[in-house]
Length: 239
Length: 297
Ligand SMILES: Nc1ncnc2c1ncn2[C@@H]1O[C@H](COP(=O)(O)OP(=O)(O)OP(=O)(O)O)[C@@H](O)[C@H]1O
Ligand SMILES: [Mg+2]
Image 1 (cartoon, chains in turn green, orange):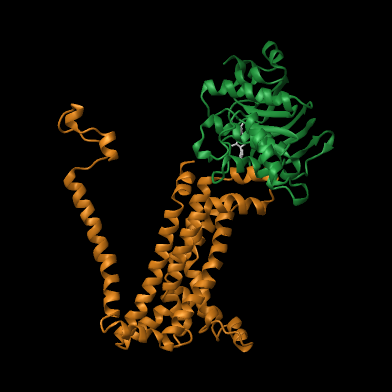
Image 2 (cartoon, rainbow over the protein chains, first blue to last red):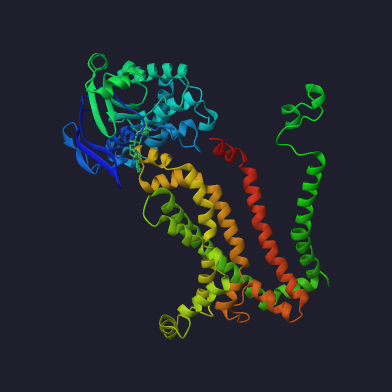
């Protein structure tokens, strides 16, 4: 799905989280929102997912105005920074949640739900853990379950807030590869937030560099490396 | 057993004889502290309870039971149960709503609202009762009209319920607020992005996450609602057999030197409280694994 951000601004009381920003995300792209802490990455992602309402501006999905769509209507697969798995449910129930929440008309029967959850568990390469609770999983496993849960609703796009933030270096590398593969096989338009420039450069087709609520530069990783548009970008990618 | 594994004794560890884990007190201190705790518990909690039951049975179980079957006692028990049955659910709903509003939204005057929730704890129940009398008594504007239209509040069940609700309001909210703050909004938001309605997210995500705190708050609220004396004494008018709850009936019987009757009823009230406690322990014990899973996460 093609996403267009048209002059979106957001303020919380007196703090401005986003100055008007515009950005076009081509269908099927894997995009990184890169920037230091407090630059407005999470805010922009939450506005795309419908969890936050912009102060002004519009969001367009495939050319249609989606600004007024509710969270539920947006059907964005959202992976939260701390994963936000339902702690009192098993992995199976976590992944099945979105399917069970559908209105009766479109809700798949139990056998179909089981089939889909099993397939997703295979996709994230954790077929054995369906009966465990989130507290019985490692950080990397939790992250993958959160991804499977988001994919279960057959989302129109995938939004991930610092998906690898809390993990050690080796697991990060593995999961990066996993995300790339899932993106390539599903073809979903994917936006992920990171403040790690290596991660952004290595994984993304398109990198969006942000600072203090503004977009500093948008481009392919090699172009940003070769031609930083502003002093901020140059400094940020050097460190 | 844990201590042994984690902190080898000085001799085996080859450390100087005085070495001791930083968090551990000397043996004597420990014994004194445990003795003080148990002694305090025995004097302040166990002894009074034992005395109540002993006094109730002082002239045999038959007398105690007879005193409990008198209309005065049965109506007091019925009234107390009715009052608890109304005020506890009402406060559970209010408490959830208040905790939800405070923890899930940002708005002005939040600190003031939190203070307001604590108000019933900080003012005397008697004052609360008097305030209700002033508001709804026959001499007030609303009260006069209500009495005229055959729906009196003061010296009647509605007043007793209102007083109990007021006094026990903070229990549920107080238990829920810290738990809900700690859990944050992420899980509810996740449910919404997965297509759940707000109501479904509340039922399937919020409620299961707060159920233990809720249960605890409800039990405390219940114990207090059944035991409330001051506020109810003012608004009920203490009409024997009509508006006298268990605590009030106990006081009246005691003042009339009917000690078996008074202590028998007191024993029933205490037993209701103990039952509540036993219920909580049983539930905690049966769901210990879930509790632990919820905490560890
Ligand atoms: N709910 C909120 N209320 C008030 N201010 C907020 C809120 N959410 C974000 N902000 C502010 O908006 C600005 C941008 O925050 P945002 O969370 O989008 O940054 P970020 O780029 O995701 O940072 P990080 O890398 O630390 O997660 C910050 O100044 C932050 O303090
Ligand atoms: Mg963030």
